[in-house]
Image (cartoon, helix red, strand yellow):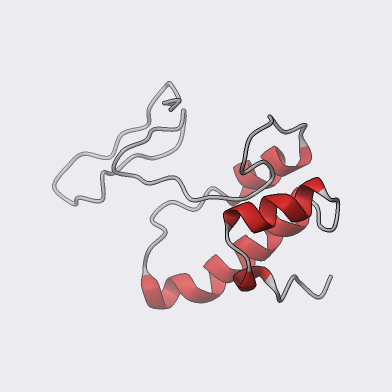
Length: 105
């Protein structure tokens, strides 16, 4: 797959519309997002705990309905917890935790 080079020409709602219209799959969007994180994170240092495998698995499963269905996203370490995934609150002085529950908003 050559990638979805037009990814940055769409906002989240635009990407979701492409998924609804079956012009791109959630798996393709996920792979493009991962590719961009891998390329840019060494410069930006924005993704503390990559959850790529979790994202790939989620993109392959049936998706719930909503305005952003099929669109990959980042989970902010400061406000959300995902069961079994390291939670740092992006602070070196706070002990790293591994929550047992996922926070649902």
